[in-house]
Length: 362
Image (tube, rainbow, N blue to C red; front, side, top):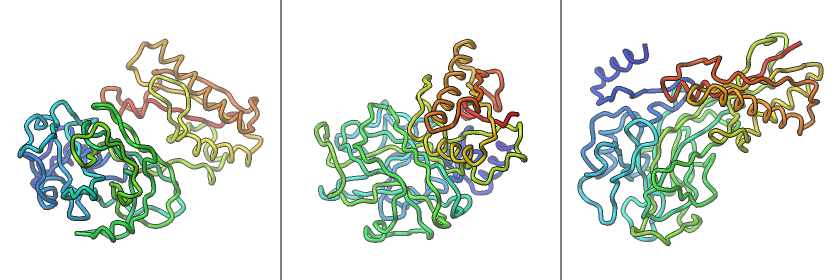
């Protein structure tokens, strides 16, 4: 169904599509989140914002900057050549496409020194609802390394916005440390928040002046910071404030903002907000007992997956216990790869299968 709908969209709008392109992913309010859907196939660097608009579907440049549409197969021979810049050997985090933007260099008299991405969300944010923002970034290795790259929101579409106008965008999340991943290493910016307005547009870039941006120029051969963006998502996450025990008894409830390092069972700090919300809910319902269940995809050995899922479920239980929930109220299970909720043949499916859930037990 998704594939046939995409084909229709491509034909109607005369879009250049690859076979894995998606307009949206399940639950994601960001259309074309991995930049796989193009209006036409690029042939080189973007000369100006209008070329970016003619090439990239659904995303725009809110100022006069010219983000680059970067396709894996074209990276070794981008035209025209840029001094000291080679994308040979780089690749998108997923799929075939990514976008590159400059985030620092205005004091160096660099043309289009601050570039941004803008996209209209599939629906406005709902004030009072909890959301999770995630985007992945890498860096041009011989460029300046900088911090402050992040995301913000606008109620209105910005076109040819001045630096002053861009400066009014309130960043919701940004890197406080200098972002310096290794070659083809991708770092996530992940943040959970409660919407305070009906924001309609998501913007990505550095919304701070160069003077308040920390940089590392020690390995730089060019006078600007150039970052690669891929896999952007914004989605509502489960909160339990209004969860009624009698309505969800024995029904698995996904902890969709709980994260672990790859192949490890240590909770990442981004998990704490949702787990604290669960603590608060359990305190409001002191008679409730829950079962915490861990699940994995099928990429590793079955015994290994079973043990990992058990350890991850136990890590969630340990957090709850450390925050005052009696251990007697918690049961812990690991199901490994035995209960998938999606296909394990795609990365998106495997991500859905790697999960922790809880359900009320009696």
